[in-house]
Length: 328
Image (cartoon, rainbow, N blue to C red; front, side, top):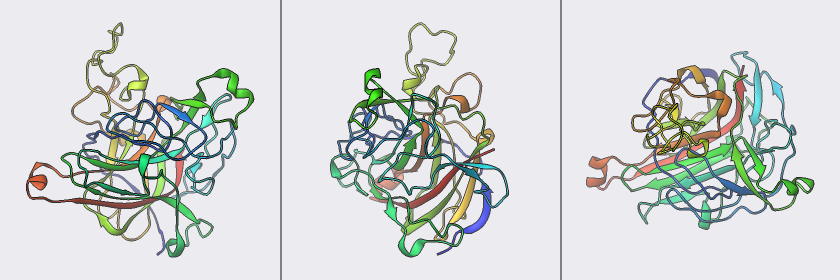
């Protein structure tokens, strides 16, 4: 199959976030939109549960500023900067340059734990850990050198459940002394990343062999919507945030249309300026996402609604993501 050389901005839709857990970056504070708290740079397995759990960030580590690149990347001709092409490691590190003293983040996936019938491939947490998937015959003319991509396939049975794959931008060592040995298996914590120099992201997406039963959402957990930012939820001593008693995990985002997620590779561009919020939580006082303080990006499909659950309907989510870039 070949990727369509087109660039499509996503339609503005409600970006209601769904609760999640599991990640293949080790974490102590998982969140529904793609954030994981504490991580380690050693293994790729762990446990996952709704809203909490632990896992690990995959093998290897990356030093500040390594692995970044820029170029045309987008067929629209807009300047782009590579975030990740999924060719390095098993689930990262992502290839964007990060500030001195920080480390690039990793990919992970997860499925909601509300039903024991839910399934996910590649496994997350105790079921094996996320790894990039070989493209094989899916290699395309737009990027003939690409051999791997981020792929996840799930069956979602639980009400308002989710299936997702995601990555985080940057992490720091919890123990500053560990910086002297960056390859050691040390706990790390995800920190906000400044993407204010960019206008959004562009990437390639494709539905897998079993298709996608719900819209695929692209979510951007930021300092306002992620609890690690210290602004959402019942935060004491911060009255400057008028909505800080609101729920966390209501990330800004947009959804792909059926034309943007089909059986053919399609390039999709998501401008920060067109992101919309959810409808249940705190999203800050600015009325828009904070690109200067992003934790990562989440690609998420929601589970059945009440009517579907009553009818015993299962949501199938099978999708690929490749070649993620910032746009300028």
